[in-house]
Image (cartoon, rainbow, N blue to C red):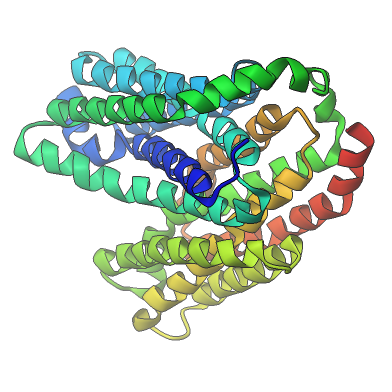
Length: 402
């Protein structure tokens, strides 16, 4: 494999483009909910069920996608995922019943399921290990940019035209990125296929990797971390508004500060992860800062002016973890099972994001907004234990299964 800096940055950039597009499609519907709700006469629960369908299918599909990636290659899987995303967008634009919206949400979730196992499989195979920390950093930042771009793109077109035009235009995004990756990554796919027979001889049999405790600790880490993020994404603005008695716009500004600061944390996390600092200690310190700050925020001691800076601290700590987290998973991955391991482990994200809204929603219904922030902090701190467990068992497990 060519190991030049230029080659590595090309791979990192292209995978980042695909990952950003996948995150764009995470938010293909929520920005359009006001239009969809009005046209179809849906309740908030029915709108929420559309996203539940997306993430449930994505989470289950991600486990299966890991096997597909290991068998047929990462590039083909990414191309298929983008194709399904584009097809789902067209389906949304033509939908005339709630059932068809649900079906398209499931197709979009299936398309989303391939990206984590395929992205990390390709990055781990094609990028020089000395640059993997930066590769994971770019991967995370591109996802954040995809989230940021979706509402602007969709609301913009929906305002100028209508929601169906907006969602149809997103199909163009998927197919343009598909063509770009297909043209630029074909040689990488051919290289993978030429090596497949050799690598398959060393591949861990089927489901053997599921016996490793560190794999399930990785899954637990992602699940718990996603519960914290899901709480921030879903009910933190309402909780902040009630605890601090501030306008909703300021509470939303706190979440925006979290997102921006998280991207900054991902950038600097790439340098930390590429250095000599142990990955589990980076995770421990970063999540301790984030979690304790979230708990402190719940007390409302400093007044409304503190919301944005404190949320920025939480976001920076959470973002700083990203590259070290991904390298820790890599260290626990048996040889020849990259796609399957990342498929199972990263399905924890989808499970966590799917579970978070009802859990935090129940707390809000019980009229305990401060508990929302406390729970976010507790989840972040609890995730540290899983990271330490991965570190303790991962290397030994890889040695015995290689």
